[in-house]
Length: 355
Ligand SMILES: [Zn+2]
Image (cartoon, rainbow, N blue to C red; front, side, top):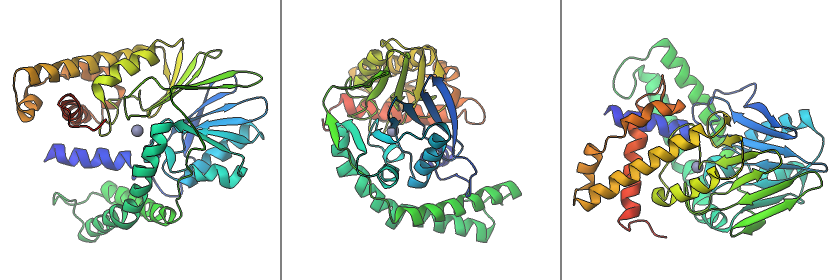
């Protein structure tokens, strides 16, 4: 039960549903090199972005759940430069990285180019766009109804009475959800105008921007943005401060992809979730975890175990201390993420995931 509840909380967090309404600032802007900025999503916004100020224009990486948050980022960019945003790169198709796309064409006009790996574009069409409809017609109204019921009855879903803090949090979530529901009505994800297979390089007057695909990983179409002069990489969800969300992942192939990202020449990583990372400690921790996890699943399959038995017997706890995401107040998040990782790896290795 506890694990189930935790899963719900993780899901809600991943959907950006704990955002307080009327937030003064959606992002912490962190300068990581001359002209290169991380946009770290504050509580509720959850997903990160980045922007690169070139001689004549600006390139933005990822656009968050809401066009209004993308507009908040545009306001932050405006504090630093008046140059127009000409490129938007989507690191992958997930809704929390693409749903704000339309803000850029609405502010900067039809000259904005949207760039993604070609399978990410396919998945935006076949998965992200339908999911906007599902959120609008089912998911968000359902959550609003559940929250209203909890507030009306003064009890959480497990029957425990609401504390004052709990009530305040739920009221905040309700207001945020209602604002999001309004916004969903007009979300039309702007699709990539430029796609590529392995790499795309922008030769700007003052820097070279590499957009690179190294293989399947967090999804089938993740790209990283690599700035060799600045020694910076923007990783999307191939690297985060925890075990990245695995629902659409190819965990065994992710290891090779992540190794390639690791072996680029960089000092600073702007990741999809969590703070800016300096050095390769965290990517090495994730690689060590992934290698152990995949090896354990392979071993369990080799021994003829069932998935349920494998989930019970695989112990990855020695890795837990290495992830900032699972320090207080969220230590149990590690077990939930590991269970999902084992399930997804099992599916990949037993041929249950269509390629
Ligand atoms: Zn993602």
